[in-house]
Image (cartoon, rainbow, N blue to C red; front, side, top):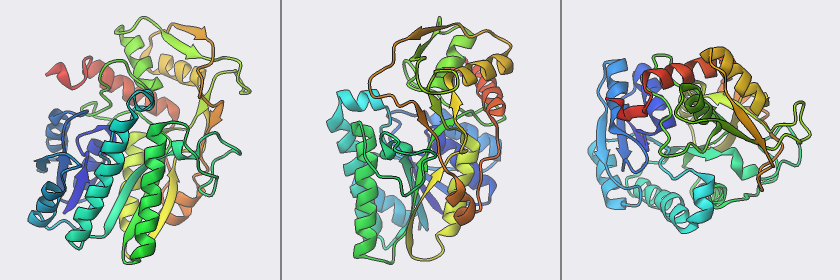
Length: 336
């Protein structure tokens, strides 16, 4: 039985689907503060398998302990967390409270139950301003916002925990930019309010929910002047979690990137999305935003070597799947 915190969220729901498809049983622990029950109902519909749902807050240690014991969980995949960079700058205490203290409570609950097998959802934001590209796992760490700092603090907490008790089995996965949706179009990314990320914003422009895309900066030292990022299909990302779980067959604490190793510019994404949707994406160029980096992409070779995992889906597939989700669910999970 795999205990998935934040399992109703974007990456969590896709990972639950992959887990169930692989024959695992799943307990989702979620507060639904930034996710929807409907995502889990659809995962059950797609797989024909049930999900055990426990509604609770990641900071509620007794509730976590009770669920871990009741369902005799053998491993934890930890997604639960607040994740908007801009919001973290405005509300840093909320991010430290939910992400850092929440993870502390989760780890304390696991220790109390004698459960020491964990896959943690970290982020490429822990690299800060890239000093060299592609980003390897030994790149110096620094965070430029409270969201990234919360992930960095948790990584340090996990290393300290492993040093104090080497019986733990911990995988730290640093994601790059998850995009796309399940090929069924039934589950996908459903941002609340104005999307923080490029792909859902582009999709909302394509379907007419938003007038145009603002491209922040076209004078970066990149081939077309717009910022470059490593976009990874959410299904590839979900598969990476299953591979990490398989690797946790002995005590260890390892960190690996999950990305494609390819940098796509904002205009690359716009052109691919136009091709996928058959719609034009109007955009306006604007000055750079403070804090944005020119390029950020991974060296995924450690994941290939250590997890026997590599991203398989290209940018056009990411856009096609994102567009299918957007057209079938114009208002996200609120459609039904």
